[in-house]
Amino acid sequence: MVSVGIDAGTQFIRIVIMRGNAIVATHITTLGSEAIENVASANYASVLKNTNLLPQDIACVAVTGIGREYIDFSDYQFSEAVCSARGVHWLDTEADVLLDMGTEKTMVVKIEQGKPTHILRNDRCASGTGRFLAITAKPLGVTPEELGELAGRSTKNIFINNNCAVFAESEIISLIHRNERKEDIARAIFMSMAAKVHSLLIKVEPFAALMMIGWLAKNKGMVDAVRALTGYNVLIPHAIDPQFVTALGAAVAGGDAYIKNVR
Image (tube, rainbow, N blue to C red; front, side, top):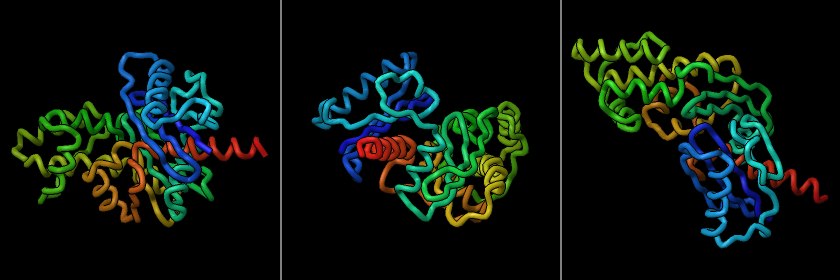
């Protein structure tokens, strides 16, 4: 059986194709100014072609993400929390909490046997998100990825007190004028973000293992900061890019729903 999971976010469309219990293909594309449905449909067709699959070979298509309601060729729709939990559980059954750090949101989900039991979000403010990182990296003249590399060379603890991206940017400019090293400022940015997500994580304690997913799970500076500040056992997906875990969960959940309906 072949199932497809599509995660339609605010900036990206992510697609995962599974055959049984194996990942066949992954694909990501930027939305740009195009309509979500058009981008999803075109890229879905492209992925099928590249994997030598026909539409009739697909048992089901499951969609998730903020744009899921705009994709009308799906068989199932699931929430992000449900799909993220399923994806994390599929990757590692020991992980009982997930931290999803994306471009526009931070989400913490407590997991029990692959199902979400507590869901906490920080999506009304840029703090703790990829957008915050992009804004605060700008005064240093580096990308978020380069910021992570800089943070690894920090030798001094300094602090950024503002959670608001605009005020944090001003604070960073002041630190630059004080001749603080870029490396130390970079680490301070990540530690500030880690403190924000820690305030969410403590609300779902106790737990055994935390898995980080999403775009920022690929940034070593962010992962190191969460580990250093919280002391948690932080897992990072290896079987699949952390950005695809929610789409993976959609494919798993869709496949399970299809089998249940067939029976």
